[in-house]
Length: 341
Image (cartoon, rainbow, N blue to C red; front, side, top):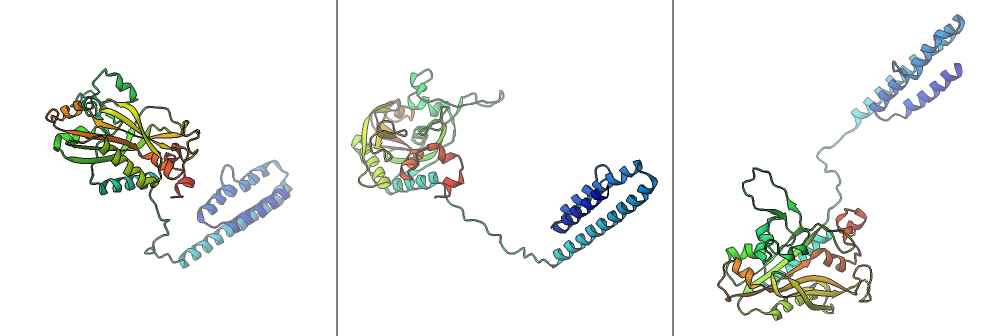
């Protein structure tokens, strides 16, 4: 019993001396003097099973230890109060805050928008929650059209008492801006719109369900594929240098005819084929001449105007521009990666 008291005394005095805040002292009071599980309280309760002589001797020692520890805790409280009163805190001094910086996707998006502004494009924004009409039907993709299978769509559930019964979706592309702009403006015009798009698909090194996109479209008279090629070539040369290796190849989109996709030589494998590109080339943009049916939804005179449109995956441009091999790294908020920009 005496050894136990000596051990409690040594440990308690060391802990009291090391305490640097009042909450720590309050915890020590409970640890040693708590009514149910206090270490010193337990010793005092255990005296009932001893002889009268042992009770007197150990009880006196335990009570003396209690008085000594209480005095030590009180003195420590006084010491902490004195130290706190002498500490001056200037509340007008701003706390050091590390400087923030822009996300690589934002950096590239702003660079792309600046290039297009130099070419005379206006920058407009559209809604992320889009109607089925603008996202599909006005783009020559009516309901039951097999082309809808090209987009794995997130549909938005609406309340039963919703004013409009029109289907709502998370936009699968930014092409809905074409008819939205055409309804309010007459050609000639050149517009780009950037933002997030959403598709219900599996993720891998090249694909995400949510990613950033830039859509551009031009409408006027006597426009051709040559105009489209010039705009895209100029963009990618400014992004990656004059020696960038790109090519156009035939493709299909319901809202353009003819349709092409722009592919760029993979910078990771130099066209040899790798886990990112598989073939040595990466699809960077879908494009084509605006389909006459799209003009008809905007109620433009039949055959009067021509135009071209293109969509560019900003995230994929970021991957190539900054040599990032996996698109998922851009959206995981890993500071080890983001702090490099």
